[in-house]
Amino acid sequence: MIMKEWLNNYMEGFKKTLDSIPLNKIHSLIIAFAKANKSRRQIFVCGNGGSAANASHFVNDMAKSASDQVSNRFKCLSLNEHISLITAISNDYSYKDIFRKQMENFASEGDLLLTLSVSGNSPNLVEAVKWANDKGLHTIALLGGNKGQLAEIAKEHIVIDSLHYGHVEDIHMMICHMIAYAFIENPGIVDSI
Image (cartoon, rainbow, N blue to C red):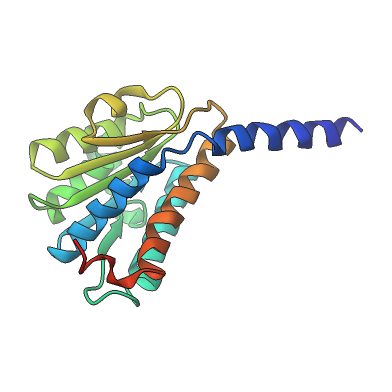
């Protein structure tokens, strides 16, 4: 009985969190991704822990499924994937540099950086967004209820009004699916902007 009550409470909390999704801001993100695709800009995505897994999942959806539907394939890269480079950077410099140092190799003005973070305070994401802003990238942060530093420095951000890591990470993945499926199910969106 106790577990059933916990499950009901979990779902009630999730439903409340689900209702906090700002669809107008997701529309704005879809337009940003469409513009990046149309102008052949590079898209970088990163996060830590569960958010790293969400970043990888999102890039998979964009690079394969969404790219299969649009005329220009998405040029997207998860900065969480290259473990030998990540360990070299963290060993020789600092763990807070793992995303920024990779972008130093690949990023150009006009590219797009999407960060995913429940806390909004991960030093490696803050470092990446600061660097990206200085270099003229369009920066976006998906965040949890604490907002953190990323809410102050990212050019666009979406805050999910919850402090529950599971709920926030679930909603972040849902937003990533909304972005990807906007292109999968509406392939003409890029040409319409």
